[in-house]
Length: 310
Image (tube, rainbow, N blue to C red; front, top):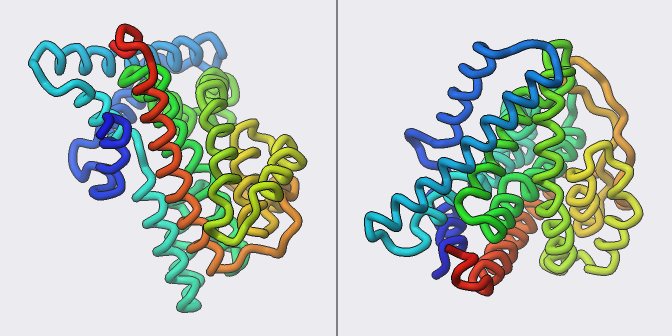
């Protein structure tokens, strides 16, 4: 089994590491660095984001070299870093727990669970709005938390995975729009956009290929990506959310609120509004896309010239 496939399998079997999670540790380091260096300027934010992403990539490379010097099996570092970076099992598990609440008509319980999936305000959402938010989160995070990491593993090995996950984490921490981060978080958000670009397109294409598993059609799914993906304000969430909308036969987008700020997102797809049962279909599609991405990226990594892989 290749390193990327092994890392993906570890996430499927075990989920996130329960203690000493590297991503959580990176987040604590980033918070300390922010507190020590913060100034509300783009330059200071660029130095903050660039330095931490570069440091994460260098750490991934050092782990690979250290494992090689210790005589560990080739690819062990890549498998370990990939496992730490992926979040597929956690994503689908949280989504299914929220779906279970909705199936029991426990709307308040579903509202309590929604913040574990996304940052939007849940207090006024009904069952359909919670279903829509969950499907959108499963779609976006399939690209971010699964496919993107695998793609960067194929491109640049452990250093690529570590740098990509660092960019994702910094975007979640400081990349959102607020008075504090309007300038400081600009570079983190742009870095995440750039690094997420290839994974989002691969994820959208694989969603189209896997769409028959949830009753969709590849041609319809890809047409939805082509027609609606660019309408989304995020250059990377748009294609994968449009792909899920086309594959599931639902309409995503519409009004939402983040941190008290209301937005009206463009409609993606032409189907009905999502229902609780569509969350189960979305998680099934997410697993299929993740498995396909693991196989594709493992093959791409194996096909690279031996010297390049080293």
